[in-house]
Length: 171
Image (cartoon, rainbow, N blue to C red; front, side):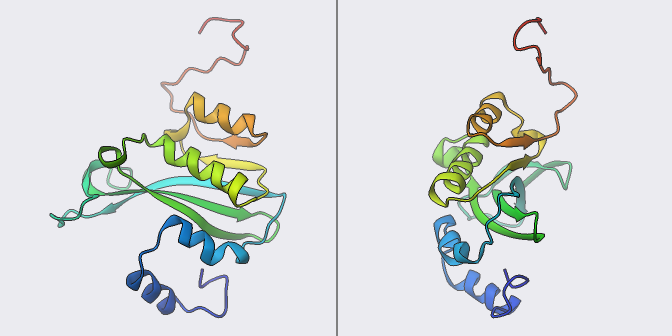
């Protein structure tokens, strides 16, 4: 945010984040008016694991796979939604969710669907394309994005099968 708004320094943003509870709704309320809307925009969904190997009392810490570590780590899983204006090359984190299947019973796909719906419906963001990594290349999510009239791109793992014949040929 500090890179996009001259009135904020990195230190001010860090102090804000450390002193306040920052919900995903609060993020949008704080930066929504700064996002430059464009029909030539995309949403990027990606997850990260915040390494908490030395934590023993944080409620969201659990053992999970980290792509950076190429293995299981103790950490907090966070799914992010970034809006990118391709006309101006500006980008904003507009939403985030903690991945906590034991606490909320949601799959890793549920937060992406919720954030996509919020960006389109609640935040009225014009979006042409959705980009996501192979973890989110699931039929129901891709059909949901397609039904909203948006393009999507995501790599497929080599063990996935795709039927592009509209059911005409068995896989």
